[in-house]
Length: 221
Image (cartoon, rainbow, N blue to C red):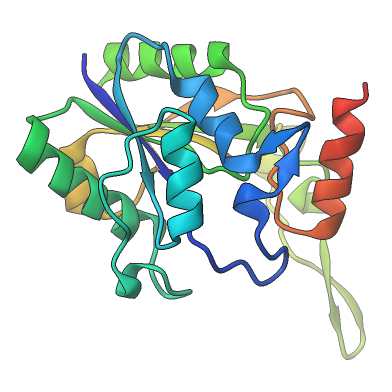
């Protein structure tokens, strides 16, 4: 099993400028994702895709494979994660041979555990379907409302959902075959195998100053 891990880290970040190389616990944010993937036997390379020379340099120093700077058209708000990963995957397979799977590790999830990645790879190998990390939502959709002219309107009123746990993709881990990613340009679908993450640290996705503050507090625990 050969799995290419891709860590996408563009230079522009509007909500939290410079977050991908901002120091968290004494090391750049991107390095948390690089370090956790290194040493996993199925991972053939940890490739950092960035348009920023400083991020690329830090990624390389951390032991990641950084063969180029990402094209500018893949460093915009319109470029999707699938676009970015496909660019890296196509280049890598042309240079280094075919892979069985590609794993997306977003640097904004610094606390994912190696055990979660290993379980994700195990499920991917076993089920031959894409794998995605999920967490239980804090507020059930049956308790969510929109504000209308004459008051509150229930957003979701489905009797079959009553009492069921509801999960959301948390962004910490995606594993998919190259064929499926190329065909669907999406990392998950209704057949995807969920990896349930119940740890508040591990499911944290850093996007705002508050998220960063929370990450620092979690490190103190």
